[in-house]
Image (cartoon, rainbow, N blue to C red):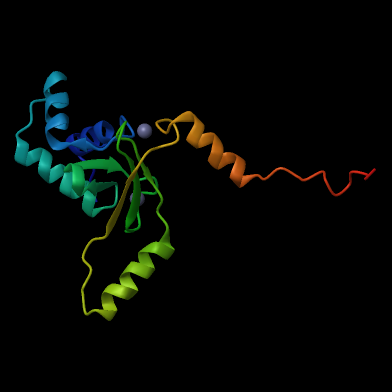
Length: 150
Ligand SMILES: [Zn+2]
Ligand SMILES: [Zn+2]
């Protein structure tokens, strides 16, 4: 496997943010750095990075995001914030296996699996709502039992 300078540069550009990056944003970033590349070249570089598990494709945005555990091929599950656009990867093998099992049962051959979950990240959620969830996660101890009556 060869990571040519262009592939490396494209990978760096994908990794620059937690937001999925589209091919055209990559093209214009390359152009700004004086490395004009033809669209097919960039698409081929992205396809290479995808095939070798360096990036995932977020189909709903026609964009790419860096993989948190590059290397072995795996399906990614992404929590995508509808407000800021950040994508957090779950990379949970149990979800991947469960989807694969159900698909096989239906006679479906899975070629690529990416699960996209839309919602709001902790930073974009309304404050009050976020606080309420935290409180529920760590319930307060009740003191009534130890209190004396009278
Ligand atoms: Zn990944
Ligand atoms: Zn957000």
